[in-house]
Length: 313
Image 1 (cartoon, helix red, strand yellow):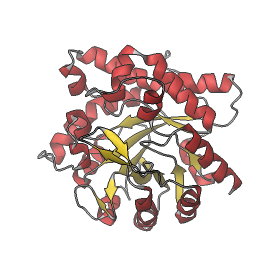
Image 2: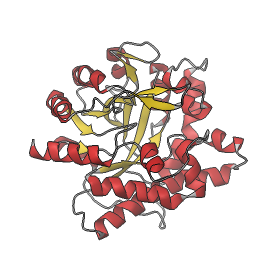
Image 3: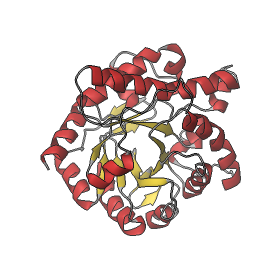
């Protein structure tokens, strides 16, 4: 950690907190930014605001901390050297923006403390799948036609930059394919920062079609991985995934599903209704989930409800 890198705001590690009980994750970064009036119809998605409106990202993190989140996930999901290069952003500036994503979340945590929040707060550096950089929907399919070695070479450089920014944990998230999970697990070795691994799933399989017990087994003996689970999926898919993750790995489980609404790609709009409920949260916790929050279309009000539910439980 360099002298100008913001230090963590608590000496309690996230792993220790998970051993003691449930921890609340934030909700969707994109829907919070959109609700504040920001246009994210761009291949860089929320990562574009790292360069153009960083203060908006800080405010989104702060909103979630104030709503009850203990962990806020950075706006680096779609931030990659290759994606930035397509926009004419060179390697050095891309590295600065990746580091900035962690700094902005730290800044929000400090502001939350100054505003009276007294609980422990953590920052998770988001690492999205290869398909997120492609911005063509393949992040929900996997099977990119790349080898594990090629995927490891893609992920390692930005993981190194994010790890050097000293987040509390690396969030290897929305992973659609067990092959990509294997690449990510190789890429985090030796970085000195713990990680969680969460798959995007459909039923009891990854989006690439692998059984979840096989997918979770990849992380069972990975010392760097402090939690495994699922995110960006239907709430109804969570409980069975939690049970499988506990049985296969024995590790704490992380879950942050979508609201349950469906994305209409042609209309570019969400359809249906939310199926995310407090009763589900209690069930996930009882099944073994220890990091619980929301992904797409899950906002601050839902995070407050999650926090209250877990506190009362």
